[in-house]
Image 1 (tube, rainbow, N blue to C red):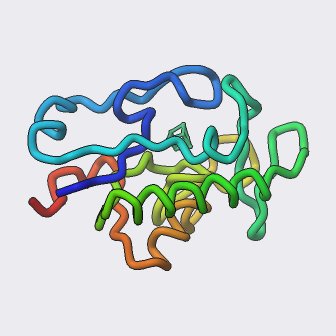
Image 2 (tube, rainbow, N blue to C red):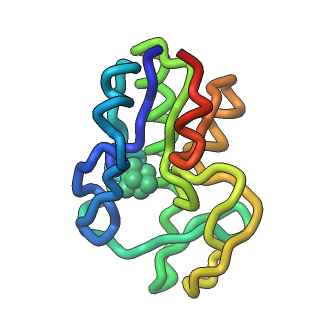
Length: 143
Ligand code: SF4
């Protein structure tokens, strides 16, 4: 199937600190699916490296307290546009991220705490009918 994939999971250095989160077994993922890489935070206009950000009460703030909700929403919309353009029915997104996380995200305290919820992009994709999987659920992806 055609799949949106968090670019950091494919090994691209787009994470806030300039690192990546390359997924073990990426070769078999690429064999089984047509992967469309996306980094919603970069698509929203944020640079790399950038300050880490977390969601709090429906908004997004950097560790220094600057609000970046608009950038996160812009990135989510751009990601949705790409999903529609390429006909993606599902997305494999990085867990716990304020953009890509689904089900559980960091709690806004910047101390490693977690809370129930979706990142901005994951929430939008789900609302638009696109199934979102975290990287630990890669085995559950449909063919
Ligand atoms: Fe990875 Fe998503 Fe964060 Fe980009 S926004 S670095 S794709 S988790």
